[in-house]
Amino acid sequence: MTAVHPERSPKGGVEGRTSELLQLDLKHVWHPFTQHQSWPDDEPIIIERAEANWLIDTDGRRYLDGVSSLWCNVHGHQKRELDAAITAQLGQVAHSTMLGLANVPAIRLAAKLSALAPEGLTKVFYSDSGSTAVEVALKMAYQYQQLAGRPQKRKLAALVDAYHGDTLGSVSVGGMSLFHARFRDLVFPVVRVPVSLAAVERLFAEQAHELAAFIVEPLIQGAAGMLLQPPGWLKAVEALCRKHDVLLVCDEVATGFGRTGTMFAVEHESVKPDLLCVAKGLTGGYLPLAATLATQRIFEAFLGSAAEQKTFFHGHTYTGNPLACAVALASLELFEREQTLERMKPAIEALARGLEPIACLKNVAEVRRRGFMVGIELKGYVASDRTGFKVCKAARKHGVLLRPLGDVVVLMPPLSLTVEEARLLTRTVYECITSL
Image 1 (cartoon, helix red, strand yellow):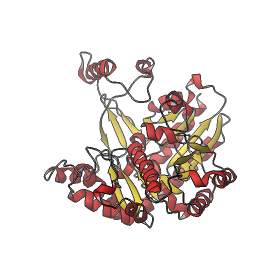
Image 2 (image 1 turned 90 degrees about the vertical axis):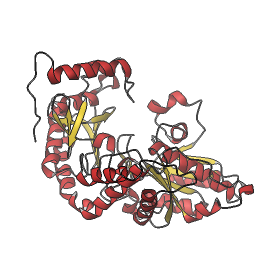
Image 3 (image 1 turned 120 degrees about the vertical axis):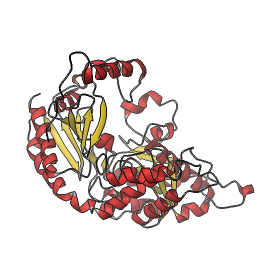
Image 4 (image 1 turned 135 degrees about the horizontal axis):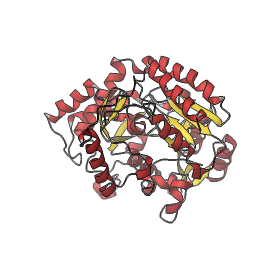
């Protein structure tokens, strides 16, 4: 599929409307992770609609969605079954609180998530985003240890270069100085270790008696540049957590719902976390929704009379939003009906083959991949060159939208990517890197 360029009117038309919208954007919108001094010079694109795996801007140009609209789109855009699920739910109720009430889609989705998740994760706590799912998990882990009679277990452990979100609790367990150093006086201290089994073993030998939980992104650290963990590392960490009564929190916000080739990344090593955080792909990329899954053991520690004040005092206005839960349920049903995990295998293979010549380029340090999660690390440049951004900007001319992480070019397409689209994606990146 190639980019489409509409006829342009010299007196306005689509071009004039795009210009007007861009001026309004520049005047009023503050974009995330964006340096607005350079934003106007980056030739911003305004997306107006979408079809399948393609986004379409206000000038009618089509772009392959190479990063799943920030890692969340699963089945493609304008998916008929997901559209219908939202429309049907709108005929019932758009939102009602879950504080003291329940709703039908939230109940059914919780049961479905519990059935799909690793064994033992029977309780589902809803929130709004990946950051809030992590916040919930951290507070649950901390309070659980207090209620379980281990008040000395107050510390949290996390990985070097971890990323778990942008609220202050999730920033605390995050370890990327670019994003987090500015807020070091606002966050709580965390014990940090590299992805080294020997380092984790030393940590547990010395401080396990004080650790409430260890939070990890399983198998691959996304925002750090798609850094891969050694085979067996996660399973060994699980064993250490079990031995020392440290809760294992797996943040599958980025890796969940098929991104690594299985429904959840922990399945690759048969790991059963105590707490599992999901968001992004939960609704197929349609609406904001997150969930923290917990074991029955954790849940039961919070049971007691009102006087005991064991309640988990945490919640959000849009917790368990019926619209979001309805489309999430429809997305999970699509996984089964369309056999998504099986159908994506040819595209994964095409992606892997297309990355081989990229890995041989002299200005590529390394290509890291797990399923549909890819990081292409460039070398020979300084940060001020914005080389990763230049590659992604050049890709637009080929009808492909990407977003870098510094000098790492990230590919994370929807699971509905076709073999031909996978070839277009890798061919485009190859051409753009060689043109540097």
